[in-house]
Length: 97
Image (cartoon, rainbow, N blue to C red; front, side, top):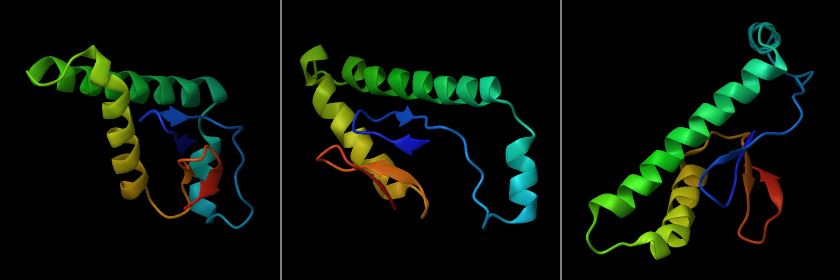
């Protein structure tokens, strides 16, 4: 998965890198595709709630500000992502941090 420009996660096909540590490989293979997608969807729902809460709790924001709020969330999520995380650059390209 990776951090996209909308402040949410985008999932990609699941591949366990050959270079991954044995314990990480074992952990990654414990969960099926359905469980993985469910977690990504739950994280994205939580992020959506937070972004909407910013609009609702700040008298200076309206629903029209949501695209700008998404960009801020996306930038913060990219900056805080761990090395090796896929992130979407401002030009839309996916790179590994």
